[in-house]
Amino acid sequence: MRRTTILLTACLLLAGTAVGCSKPYDEKAKDCATALTEQTGGNPADKPTVSEAKERTDALDKTLAAMVRTGYERIAKDAADTVENKTKEAGKTRPGACEPLSDDDYTDLLMAKTIDGLGWTGDGGQFDRLKMLDGLRN
Image (cartoon, rainbow, N blue to C red; front, side, top):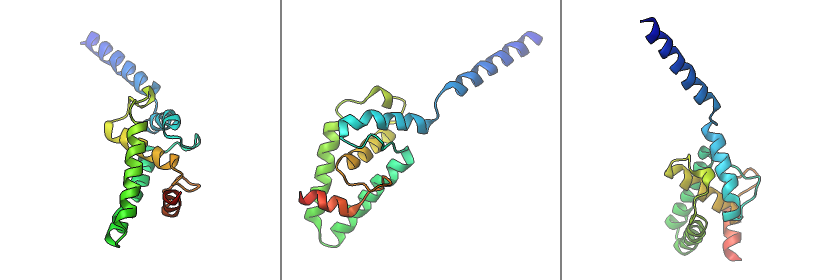
């Protein structure tokens, strides 16, 4: 019995040490965002967490949906095509720093960094509809 308790305690200590040494998920996401900077042409200082990346991509989706509802289908399609083409190009090779992330989280980060690389974000990294429209005009 005593031997089992000692082994169990040792295993728990080792497991706790292993968990303590790993990076938090948000830090892994920021490392991935840094690795995606070169591929997307984004700002090196733009290192969104997964939740921030999801907010950015959701804002783009909502903007495009609103544009379609209000009769601006062509502009919405141009924006969607621009993001899709740039994301496909940038996402051909998944950087090693992005491997710990789930496929969905990686896709959100890739999209967020692509939106930034297109110049469609404001100072705080949020999606900016007016910058998107300006970018599509050029």
